[in-house]
Image (cartoon, rainbow, N blue to C red; front, side, top):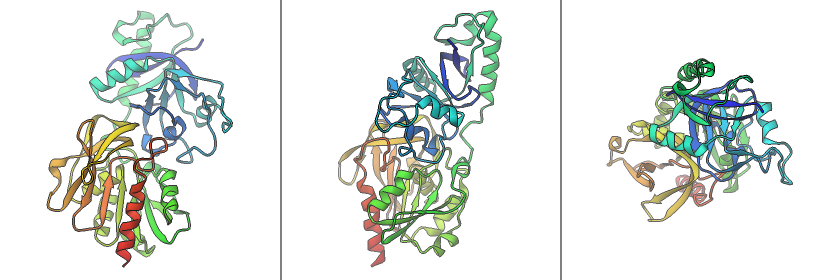
Length: 380
C-alpha cells in the first residue's frame, strides 16, 4: 500500500494514503466543518492556494457530477480526509472523487487523523504544508508526530519536506483575486434588474441566486474600472467572494469608493472586506478563520440568529470603522467578529458569510431579495 504524508512548516506531520493527483502541491492548511458538499468546496475559488481538511468522516461516497461545481476548475491545492470511499453510490454521480482530483492534478490524502490535525491548527493557527509521498522502502512511521522523532532512515527526507512547506507563499500580502477572476465578461439570467458582479472569485450559485430574484447578471473581471462599470448602466453592483488578503486588492477598493453612493452595492465575503476597506476600515488575518456550513450569526437589527456558510481567513477590525458612517449589522456568535456592515448614508451593505451557501443552509437567501429591494428603491 502506498503511503503519503502531510508535513507542516512547524515540523509536525500526519501520514495517510494518497489518492487523486500527484502529491506535489502545497498550501495553507485549513479545515472545513461542512457535512456535505466536498465538490462545491473544491471548486470554490476562495480556496485558491489552500489545502482543505474536511472534518466530516465519510468523503467520496456520492462521487462527483457536472452540475455541482462553483467554478470551471477546482481551486484547492489539496484535500485531507479521514475516510475516502472509492466507489460512489449516487444516481447523479458520473465520476469518482479520485478520478476528478487526478484529472485536475490535485493531491488527496486519506486515512489521516483529521481530529488531531484540526486541534493542532486551532491551537497553532493555520500553517503552510505540503503533501508528499513516502518512499516505498521507508520504515514504519507513526500516524502523526514531530519530524525530529522520526527514524534516521526517513527523517532526512521529511525534513526536506518541512523546508518545502516553509517555501509556500503566505496568504497575507498576496492578491489572489487577480489569479482566479474571469478573463472576460459573461452573463447569466434575464431579469429586469441589471447587476454587475465584480468577480474576485465568484461562486456560480451567487449568479443563480440573483437570477432567481429577477436579476440579469453581468460578471466582470476584478480589475474592471468604475468608468467601465458605469458604462454598463447597472441597477446594482455585487462584490463577490474570493480568496486571500483583501488589502493588496487596492484597485478594487478604489473602484468601490468611486461607485459608493452612485449605485446600490452588496458585498459577500471578500467583497464584504473590500467594502470595509473602501469606507475607511482595516482588516486583519484571523488565527484559523471560519470555514463550514454551521456558523451562527446574529442579525443585530432583528435579533434573529441564522446558521450560515462561511469561508474566510480575514476579517474587518471593528475599531477601525467610523460609527457615524457605518453600522455593524451582524455578529458571528462563535467569536463576535463582524459578520455584516451597512453604510448609513449610501445604499451599500455586505456580509462576512455566504448567503448563496452551496454547500450550506439557506437561512440567508433573503439577502438577495434585500439587495433587489434596495435597487428598486434606487430606481424610483
